[in-house]
Image 1: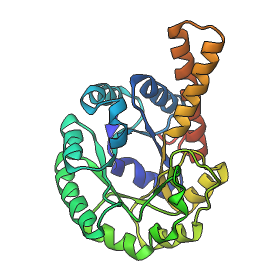
Image 2: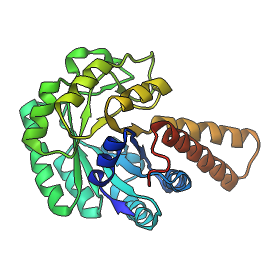
Image 3: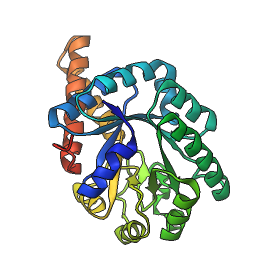
Length: 278
């Protein structure tokens, strides 16, 4: 069933578990992720991000993602992640996405707040939820996630929520997007302070590559949504390499890849504590 972030994250926050967002650039990844959620009876967030559109354009993938979400036997949020432009966010809403993230965190803070507030107003008219970001989650490739000046402060978080009305807030506490070159050091104390300052569900970006204890600790201290993509790609890559080495036919390789991605999603669902919550 298609729903939005408000419907799944408040329950996660109250139940002290997290719901995973799994970016899917094609129907193979989509099939794997929803099958995993249905098998484990977990809510799930299916998404794509603006930087991924060259690998799966919105108008091509939206119909299949939304149709599969509506047909699912568990709650499915269809989320447009890291929307960098107002135009693309509007396109996602028009195509039927039930949730969007406007990410202006890399630019001017006042402009980020103003544009996020405008997106919230429009998205809510569509019945969609909105995630924003204050502070800046870095890129693992440049290892800028250790720059504590970019971390979210409790004061920034409270002010941003009050001025924008977002339904979920991505916070920067030491994670980064992509594959980590070195082990990240998460500021759990900072997360606790943010959680104490706001009641809006909090989001952890840059989840692929964190340790199981990192996930448990952040969820324990208030994270209600975790974003995963790189780990799914790595699982798919390994499966395809195995299939090629074994001399499998094309469709057998494809099915082997889907099964591997499904298992990767299931592992995260179990770790996040959302199994059985649908």
